[in-house]
Length: 239
Image 1 (cartoon, rainbow, N blue to C red):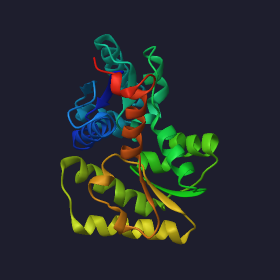
Image 2: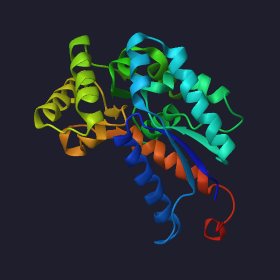
Image 3: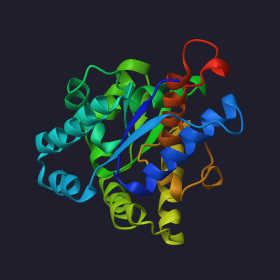
Image 4: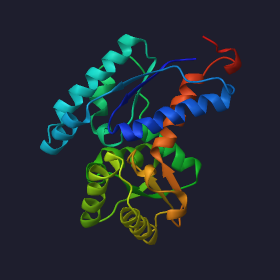
C-alpha cells in the first residue's frame, strides 16, 4: 500500500470527511480491519484565508508548497490537496515535490465523464466559481461545458461557505439557497451539479437537487484510494 499525503485544514471540517472516506475506501477494498496508510499536514486556515482575501495567492501557494515538502520528507507517496479553491495554486504545490499530485479537477472531470455528463453546473467559493482555474481545467481536459450562478448568488453561497460551513454550522435557510442555485443551473441546461467546495457536501445531499450531484470531496478521496492500492494484489499489500 502506498502512503497518501493529505494537505488539509481548509477547513478541517471537510478534511475530517477526507480522512473518513479514504479509510472507508481502503476498508471496503481490503477488509474490515484494514485502513489507509496516510500522512496529514493540517494547516492553520486563518493565514490562508487572509491571503485569499488580500489576493496574495503567491504567499498562500508558498504555505501549501511548504506543507507538500513536509509530507514528502515524512514519506508520503503522493500529494492530495484537500480543497477546491486552493487548486488555483496547484502548480506551485505540484512543483514543490517530486511526488505525483492528484488534482481534484481530474477526479471531478472523470466523475462527470463516467456519469455521461457534458454540461455541468459548478458550485463552490466565489474564487472557484468566478476564476477560470477549475472551469478551464474541466473544459480543456474533459470537454465539459461549465455553468456557474450569477454574481449575486456567488456572493451568497461564498458567505455561507466561509461563515457557516467552515465553522461547522448547518442551517436550513442555507440549504434552501443551495437548492435554489442548483435549480437555476438545471434550468439553464446543467445535466449534473459539481459540488466544487469540500464543505458543501456537509449540507447538501442528493435529494436536494433534480439532477445528479457529484461531490468533489468524494471523487477526490476515491482517487486517492485508487492510487494507494494501485499495483500488485491488494490483499497482499500488508506493510
